[in-house]
Every structure is written in C-alpha cells, then in structure tokens.
Length: 223
Image 1 (cartoon, rainbow, N blue to C red):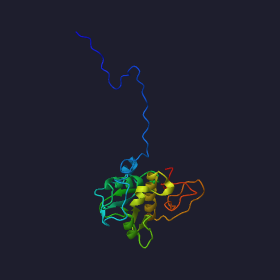
Image 2 (image 1 turned 180 degrees about the vertical axis):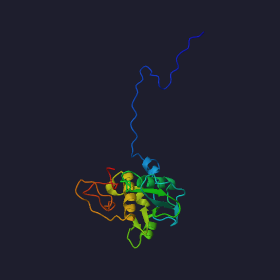
Image 3 (image 1 turned 90 degrees about the vertical axis):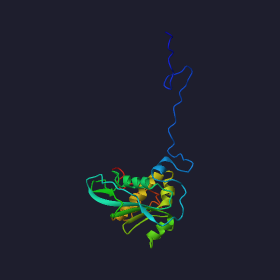
Image 4 (image 1 turned 60 degrees about the horizontal axis):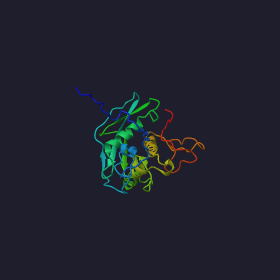
C-alpha cells in the first residue's frame, strides 16, 4: 500500500506562513453607489435623491402585528413612487425604530402594528418637493420633515444624507427623524436643549441645530 500524504486545507498551518488578522469592516465604507451597509438596510438604493418625484404615495404591502402588550397604534408606511428606495427595507426600519425598547413604547404603554390599510398613523418617505406640498402651510423649504394631519412626512434627502451635526451617523439621524415626527403625532411638542454636553431630547429640532447638546435619536435613550 502506498503511503498517504496529508492534505493541506486552509486550516492547516504551513511552514513559514504568517497569518495576518483581518481588519474589521469599516462601518462607514461606501460602495459604488455612495452607500454603506446601514444605508442599504434602511432602504436606500442610491445616495442621490431627486428634488421631486412622482407625487404618488404607495403603501408598502403587507403588515406585521404589534410585538408588545401595550395599547396598539396602527401604522401605514408609504413611499413615493420614483424614489431610489426599497420600500420593504424602509418599512422594516420604521417599525424597528417605533418598537425599539428606547422608543415611545419603552414603558410598555404603546406598541405599533403595521398595516397597508386604514391606520391611525402614516409614515411617509417622499422627495423634498412632495414633503413641501404635504406639509403646507408649514414651511419645510425642501430641507425638513413634518408631522401633520396624522402623517409623518420624512424628507428623503435627509433620510439619505442626515443633518450636518450627526456627522457620519446617518443611522442615528434616521432613528431621530422617525421618533421626532411620530412624537408629534402622539401629541409631543418641541423642546429645547437642556444643557451643554447633554443628550438632545428627541423632540428638540435637531435637524435645525443640536449644539450645545449632542445628537440623540431616542425618546428614552437608556431604555
């Protein structure tokens, strides 16, 4: 019988071979479309958002039950047709934010269910021009989002690029804008920064200015 030589695979150390540890992936690395992994997870298909799109708001099909025991608020998520957005990913992000332990239902009093039919609350992602139309007579001037008539209208350009004081943390800004606008629908008003170096309250107008506070996306950031 001929002797059998061991077969080397990728797990077998070889003489003179040095293993170099892999560097952790850069969470802010961008792909050819100018997007990071978190941007893709939030539904973005391109970093370039048009100033205007079709004006047609399309409900994201399907629904999901409220995960918590509190009073249920129904939510319909809509995306303007013509935006570079994957609707299901956007809807999943919105619902994950609303039902996060740091969100408006943190004390167990509220839980949010998604539907594509009649709903108490609507969360809409739309182009700057369409947001301006939805928010009038409020002046969002192509820059801001708003909450009006049971609808949280989120500016897609901000969803893509965030606000300057959030730096590279676009995910934190997305948490903020969903919680801020839905907060208005739940009856919350604007508040000011409580002091230098403190977390900004989620109902502070952080798209306008955060300082001297620091950015925060959550109603109850410690859960």
